[in-house]
Amino acid sequence: MKNINIICVDDQSEVLDSVIRDLRSLEDFFRIEGTESSEDCLSLIDEIDSRGEQVGLVISDHVMPGTSGVELLKTIFNDSRFSNTKKILLTGQANHADTIKAINEAGIHSYFEKPWNAEELLNTVKSLLTQYILKTGIDHTEYMPVLDQAVLLEYLRKNA
Amino acid sequence: MSFNDNTNWSFENDNAEKQIDRLKQLYFLTDSASRATYKKGKHIVTQGALNDHLYLVLSGTVSGEFEIKNFLDTGESRSFEVFSGSKGTFVGVHSFFSDPHFSFFSVKAVTEVEVAILKRGTPPIEPETYGSLKEQFIPMISNELVHRNFHLLKTLISNEQTLNRLHRSELNASLGQLAAGIAHELNNAVGVISRKTDYISEALDKIIATKSPEMHSFFQKGFLYNAVESTEQIRKQSRQLENKWKLSTSKAKILSRILFSSPELEASTAALLENFSEKASYWELGRDMRDISLAANHSADIVKSVRTLGGSHVTREEGLSIYETLSRAIALLKPNLGNINLEVDLESIKKVPLIYGDMTEIVQIWVNIIKNACDAMMVAETKDASILIRSFYSEKEVSVHITDNGPGIPKEMVDKIYQSDFTTKKNGLSFGLGLGLTIVKRIVESYDGKIFLASRPQKTTFTVKLPIEKHYEKY
Figure (cartoon, rainbow over the protein chains, first blue to last red):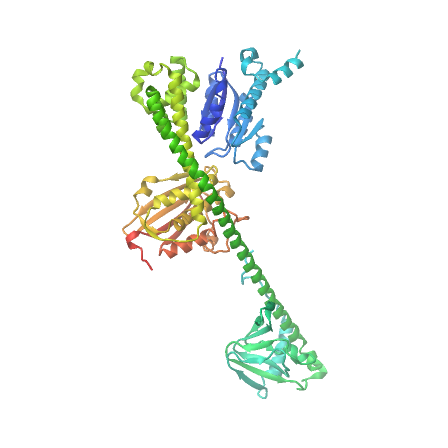
């Protein structure tokens, strides 16, 4: 258990703390990590991968010193080790071009604008992680309490 | 486009030039031709009056002016310059050749003017080859016409420029006012948040101290928590703690943070972990209050900076700290920094002596220089863009160095960057803070200070020198 990691990236520690806190109800099932830069995130996912764990989801801010969030998600998108990893862009400052790039080149699955709604974020995270678990063939029964029921039912119906 | 006199206004025609030269030689520059001298300010021809002469200016400057009585219903008369000329210019062309021979506008002597005169009725020379007087003068007439048209065109372009500049400065001014208005409104709201946060923090502190004294120190540790360790350090340590004490990730992280900030507790970790859920909650509560309070102060700072910039009154006072002006400027610019790394050498900045000055003006200097560097690096997509701010001082002056690693300013632009109509930015709506470096230079010079620029690719430094308090000369 707890082999699936959720990584939150935001250069502002108070914001990072809030994102992590909003996901706390998932912490019995997933490992929730935070990094304050894209560079730190990249070394963390390497570390996770070398431990044989998975990166289920990355939630990143966009405008940060150093590598931007969109660039970070693009790097992850193009890394075959993380081809199933779900990606959320959580930002208040991405312009139109950044957003287009995030969708086309970084394959993001969801976009949240700051300030975000905690419940909405949590539901999206659950739904994306459910998809991740089903896609990667991990035994979903271990995660029942936190899975998105609608996504799960749809999957079971299709695979019946 | 910037209008200047490098524009090629040449429309000379060699053949016409020759014919005009012949006319001058034959009709005006002979011994028998009449001459006259006009004192400065005198009319050579007068708008609406009859004119029988064609004049060639031999020396001095003339100006053709069209007068409008009751201009725009103001009851006042206004004159508009139609053309200007000096040696070689013909005057009275229209009225001399047209019928009736009334002057369309006045021509007056700007300096003392000497003219040669051709009277109407003078017989043409060599009419069999060159035709009538009118025919002979056609090249001159068309030449004058072209000159005057170009004169008007230049006036038109320069008017257009003036209008543009006016429009831009009005835009800047109104944006500044708008920002100041919003800031004023927000100031009250932010003020309430900031003040009430302090009240709640104090109240919570007291309540916890009396009701749950054993939890009080955790609330306080959370409230005073100031991360010195990196998230990576926390991550590594909390992972160990998690395994060692069988804790959840979030609790392990809180424990890790508590141990980092209070290393003396490490020996008694087992005791610390008794009832840890509650302790962790109080610690988090403390840290939440701290975050709110920091955020409220930060908002208040930004609002204050925007208000300062919107304000127009300038009060130069003693005891202004460069550190404080830079802090304000940075607070204001922070949201615009994007991924630019701002490195501020606080040590050097805190050391410099106080100056005599106005907060608004000095903040404007930094904002404009830093903003300019940011814009240049964003446009150039500079890699690992960074700005370094350092400060030095001597016995008489303080100097602030703002260095960026952007593309640099090309040599040919260096002389122009302080001009008010010079910009490389396509949309100049950068916050409505003013006219960038023009304002910077004006402010710096009004303090008897100096601004220097040293630029090459990857290293552009603006150095601003301002006199320190006791060396400032008050006017």
